[in-house]
Length: 77
Image (cartoon, rainbow, N blue to C red; front, top):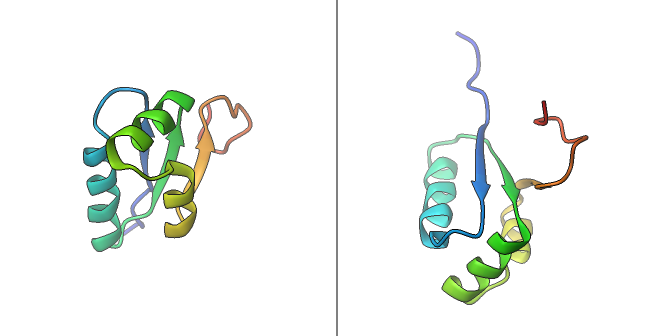
């Protein structure tokens, strides 16, 4: 059996930071790897909805992240 591929999670400026945070928590609880792509608007909405900086939360959790414009990211086509 081949290992599972990482789950790509996009965090945009749409309201839903609580859902994104919970999804990442659940993936971690289940031992799944996740790669997070964020927009600047996503970081702003995260701060407004959760009262904490997105970048700091992701770094604290050790999440692999890429900014939306990183065309050299391994997940870019």
